[in-house]
Image (cartoon, rainbow, N blue to C red):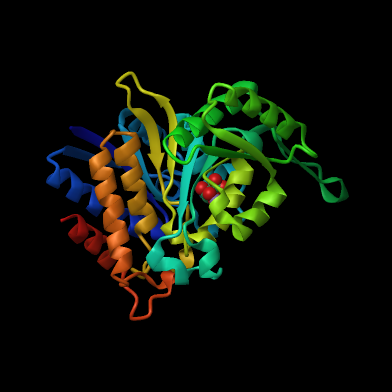
Amino acid sequence: MDLHVLVLPGDGIGTEVTREAVRVLRHVAAKWNHKLSLTEGLLGGVAIHRTGTPFPEETAKLAAEADATLMGAVGLPEFDNAPPEQRPEKGLLKIRQALGVYANLRPVRAYKSQLDSSPLKNHLVEGTDMIIVRELTGGIYYGIPRGITGTGADMRAVNTMTYTRAEIERVTRMAFHLAKTRRKKVTSVDKSNVLENSQLWRKVVVEVAIDYPDVALDHLLVDNCAMQLVLNPRRFDIVLTENMFGDILSDEGAVLAGSIGMLPSASIGDRRPSGAWVGLYEPVHGSAPDIAGQNKANPLGAIGSVAAMLEYSFGLKEEASAVESAIEHALASGHVTADLRPSGAPATTEQVGESVCVAIS
Ligand code: IPM
Ligand code: MN
């Protein structure tokens, strides 16, 4: 198979974890005889430095041409006070929108060998296996009007949370579709006791659910969900929620997996004429400037994102599960990065990438 992948390493540890993810991708392509063509592009802070904008035209063009896009992370502290249009994060929001990847799948698993990495009690986290399905191209992240107006005491800031029925419906279908392949349970998360936005969300989810009679549906308010995630994480199979709630809850989910460095993600849009899903693959973590350039970031979230790419954009299930088993294998060896609190000397980013390749062998 021809795999044409755009690689956007981005900023900070993004470049380091992406290097390992690409190492694994090359390894898989060689082993299964796929023809891999990789293109590299600019996104985020590095793109601002080189071109003056976080999402250059050239990157938009490359992403549209590629079968799938693999991303590292964006964000640099030097842009902390820059206006929104000139921030690295804007590049990420724009590429999500440009590709129309409205469903962000964030699997959260507690690996047996890593139970001690979580600050929570083992018996609570053990067996956790859920996917947070986060709506990614709507809601308060993109709503208009937005901005800061006025001066001095009259300054005022506004953001708008807005959803259409169609936006809720398509991500809900994605969540139910996934649930059918798993434990057949969707938990929809909203704030319908306060927000009209959430009232529409709940109404549409209930309507869509009628088409999936074999999938159980329940609803949680987002504040309660935040609590249930750490009280009883095994109760969750698919968590379906809007953009900002999903952003917040997935960082909380990282605590269950032992480290945010563990979490992969797949952002999926519509199907291309070829039948492949449009996909953008990135670890959930950020650019972590504090540990950048030290070869100590955990690359497993990025490598897990490669597994997701193989599965969703290329339909290569065998290759995808080989990568997932290799991740498990690398974890079980105990030679893991510092964030997972290994008992011995921590592994480097590069060593973890290599050991995943060896485990695939
Ligand atoms: C994420 C990140 C991004 C988001 C930031 C970097 C814009 O936190 O992917 O979770 O909020 O979506
Ligand atoms: Mn986030």
